[in-house]
Image 1 (cartoon, rainbow, N blue to C red):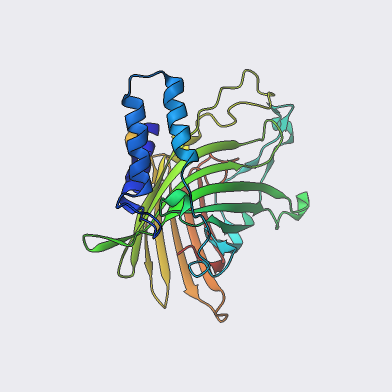
Image 2 (cartoon, rainbow, N blue to C red):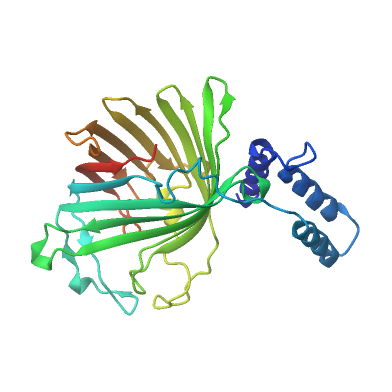
Length: 333
């Protein structure tokens, strides 16, 4: 999988990069860099000399990485959806689990309320434009998704889970025709996600992700696919380092396929998460999002249906069915 991601990165660089006005040749930076690396790797010299040759080449390149202010009107922008779901109902009998020193302690478990609230905040900030002359813009982003048992007054309405997701990514806007569609966005991301909990309840993972968005008239579609970074297994459950969720990708999948229809009256999106390379119809998840106009032009009514695994990190291996109602503050398309 890592080789596929590296190959796709070079394809993106070679296809999407555009020469800047200051370049004197017709070659893009990515083509020159790829050729230099390939020539060095093919040469009959030691690995140290190969690395030094590549390093010297990079040091002698002059870059113009300023952000184009005309392209990005605001410094802080929405990334994924920003929303507030006021009531999320699940018919499943879910249990709030407890750990002590990294060991499950079922004696303190209790049944969760079937209703809760959920909200997501997601923003991104452009750091560099035309990063390293690749034609891509470099961003940093942060997404926070919180699950709030607001109706469970018996247990003081706790926030049962919050997932934190910082990212660093390169984003291209190629606007290239592919048949009857247009490739709008290509993105290469480096993502960390965790729930910030103590040992036992802690869940975290790192991944490299590719994203492609295409458009055909009012229909947007594409996919995300990711490769999880390797982590060592824990020797003991109470260790602070090591893999917190060994079978995460097995349950949540390794790709997300989506299609979304947008109109003035409503938007509807269908998302299917699975792993086609190790397919199991009983794993992954399916999500349907529907937004409708509201009396406030800045907000939309938001309805979501979710069924499957991976709704939140703490419940990645628990199958959940949920219907949710609320407001969409800012959509991602």
